Image (cartoon, rainbow, N blue to C red; front, side, top):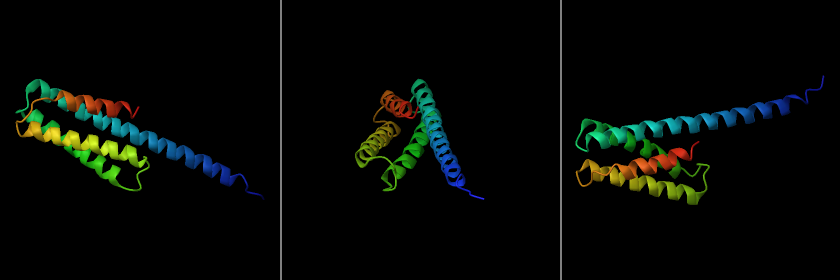
Length: 123
């Protein structure tokens, strides 16, 4: 009995699985950004010396550390120029978060705005 239908079925299922996994990954990343953004908004309202600010900056740093590590991986699917740009944005975000943590700034707006832009790109 010919089984020529197996390979096309396999490819269709594989393609759907990869597409679903990619969509699920983007959704998970978007939710992570939304949680960080919400924390930053709360920190902005309560103040840079609050427990909420410490938590928000910690979560922000964790998220961007993971993203930068992934972007630095040569196997990452993004084009090298885009990866470099996103890493630069991430380093800026981390540096600005450190300024807030050390009392050198109280401006959460730039962190919120940049993370909103990145999150919007995941939709």
